[in-house]
Image (cartoon, rainbow, N blue to C red; front, side):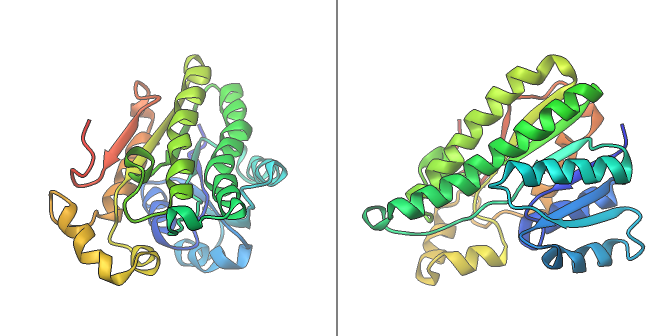
Length: 246
């Protein structure tokens, strides 16, 4: 184990918070965004020397991009131990106004991107005899979404199924695959994507009466990324304030 973790979509928001948490926990961190420039300031703030942080571009819709990052981390640090499939796109649109192109775009980013990350890194982990994959799911994937579009909800629903499929396939190889499913979080992206007149009603619908803490989500990811989480696989950990209970 090299204590190396890749976090996709880490230019801001939850991805950045997860990357910072894992780095604090002692991981060497690879952070990716749509461009290297988008994540380089975060890398510099974590470690200006670049010894424990690597920043790069990754289009999660392209398998070759995942393969290139895998190769780069093998060259820099000898391999990767943890993959956090965080990159995604949240979009709000009325059901009957979602275009075929918008639907395909959401599925390609949120679902295909997760699939490709798992498909490229799971065999690498298997060959090394150890690995942790954590997929960032969403409450919308469970309840169909109340503040997001159907295309987003459908794509995230598929993430939970992919998590189980990969978990089953690689369970005997020392590789665990799990998902974390947050509800609305106290993050700028929530306020940017949801109509302001809906925010109060959404908060009122949460049994605990408040949006979730992104730092706690990062803590949960770090727990699932640890060696001690060897008996947890195929799970989806809900962090939604009680909106969805099962």
